[in-house]
Image 1 (cartoon, rainbow, N blue to C red):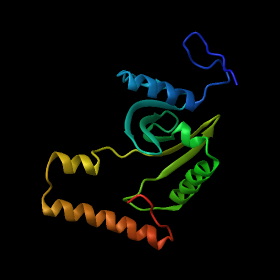
Image 2 (image 1 turned 180 degrees about the vertical axis):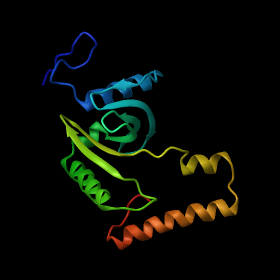
Image 3 (image 1 turned 90 degrees about the vertical axis):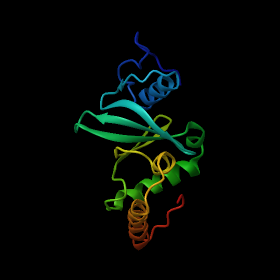
Image 4 (image 1 turned 30 degrees about the horizontal axis):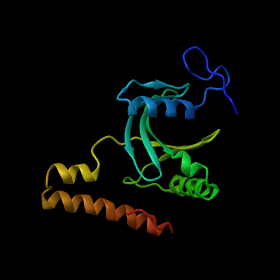
Length: 165
């Protein structure tokens, strides 16, 4: 399907999609341009991570005035129906979990060839970054492991087995 773009390189009226803006953000960030990308609801601010199944972006939700994280499934995975269904199933599972050490899911969106999770945004460093930068004291490690164990225990109590620990 051929989409018409306006003079700014954006989809013409009625065709504005989050996926277009996420793809535009990806292209700009890969070129080193960290300019925010504006969508009717989300302003993509920066790429915060990338994994085997997709990329994560920090965005600002203009409707509710808060930062969110948007996880976009890779295009190659989106083409596989069983992967899309697993992604949706994982989103439904995440939506029913309520724990201080587990992200809150705000939405799952699918728009013309793209699948996204919109979750709460948690600022800070990743565990791997913390461990690489400064060897933590035993107290810090115990605190981190306790929080992780409590979250995993809660998830198991809900009948969920986490695949990526």
